[in-house]
Image 1 (cartoon, rainbow, N blue to C red):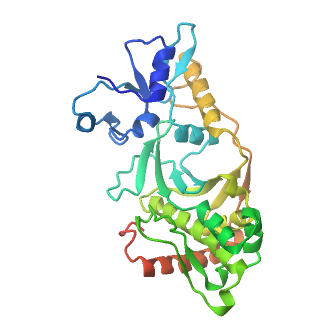
Image 2: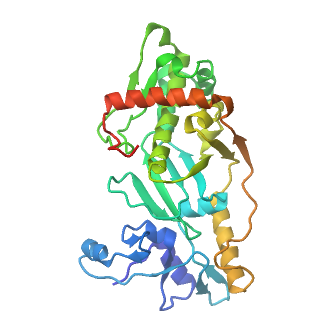
Image 3: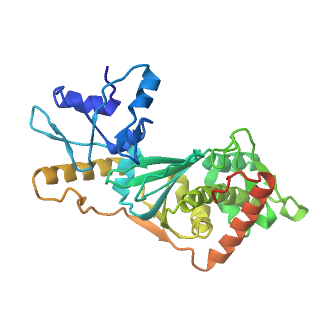
Length: 336
């Protein structure tokens, strides 16, 4: 009869099970039946999934309140984990966030939702009234771990040190890191490829560097998908344990072609939730504008500039793109 996500249900319980049921833009945008572009539900999709119509919760604005608990505590609108982390980091238009896990993702703040028939861009709503287009890649740190195992080195720190003994372009080696198939570009049944083998390039340090360059160039491909749709990227926040590796920090600014920010590890989703709670409370008390989030201390971070390496990074990217396009022509379908 009615559909709620788990955190919507918890809010409803905390409020004493009122007649009003609520959710938020961020969580709603991840359901598949709320349009971030139109800011409205698609009840036809709900009916298609369930076989009958269902009641759906009211979608609150970023600074709205869901209500008061019987004990008198204000409950804010809430949001999804990704949106809360972006809010906690304080990202804004011109910022992108690259997350390095076994797989990877690139998201950016944008003024509108992006419809994408190719399926490469997922358009979420953020916690401030803006939008968070996201592009996923299937292979990120798993390519580094696989290379470390192949070379018999002890962990990613040693692989990083080995990679820095090589030179930009890895003596001509190019690794397309599509080890588990790939989502961006859409090559679900492909495998990774190592190209450019010559006698002089067959050294451990060159393969180590090719793995870092391949991972970062693949993520740069994902960034270019967003840039190709008009998303502004002036700086990149780099998240994940691998962001601390010296090889990643040395190569990322030049390969991404922009300033790179490496925030200190913190619970950014929890920080974003606290910021949203402060916003909702201040609006309810009349001390803050509902369109202006509260000022918040920014994340402590390292800031890395591409500097003189920008041209070298461009050459490495060109080598990677030429190899990718030769092996997988038309993989991006004209999006780049």
